[in-house]
Image (cartoon, rainbow, N blue to C red; front, side, top):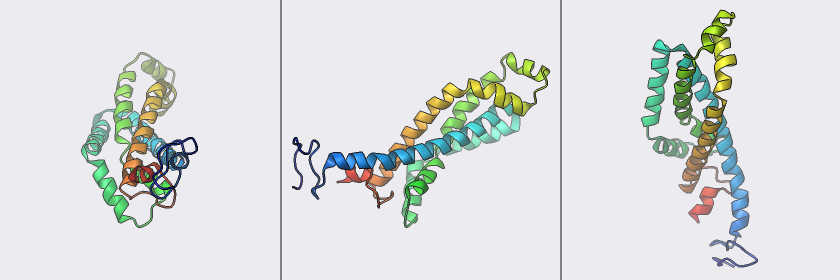
Length: 188
C-alpha cells in the first residue's frame, strides 16, 4: 500500500511508491557510510600530511599551507559540490566521495598544524635531534604518535561532514542515482 502509516508489518510505514521505509533506510545507509569513510580517510590523510609538514617545518611552508587551508575553509563548498555534481553526468559512490574529499582536508590540516606547532616545542624534539634523528624521523616517530587522539577526533568529524554533504547532494538528486541512499529517502 502507498503512503502507509507505521504498522507492525511496516515499522516506519511505506513511501509514495509502496516501498517499506525501514528496508530503504537499511539499504540507504551503506552508500552514505561508504562515501563518508572514503572522503573521511582521504581528507584526514591529506590534512595530516599537510598539517604535520606545515606545523613542524614552520616559515614559508607553514604560511603557504595555512593560507591555502584558510582559503578552502572560506569557500562555500556545498555550492561548488552542487556545481561539480551537476556537471558530471553519472556519478558513482567513489567519485562522489572524492569530490567531497577535495573540500574536507582543510579542517584536519588546521587541527594537526596547531598541535604540531605545540609539539615541536616540547623537550623531546631537541633530544631526538641529539640522538641523530633527522626532521622526517622526528615528525613521524615522535610527533605523529602524539597526534593520534586528534587524528581520530578529526577523522570522525570528517566522516560525519562527508555523510552530511553526500546526503545534501543526494537530496538534490545529484548523487549516485542507481543505489538507494539516505538523500533519496528524504526526498520522497
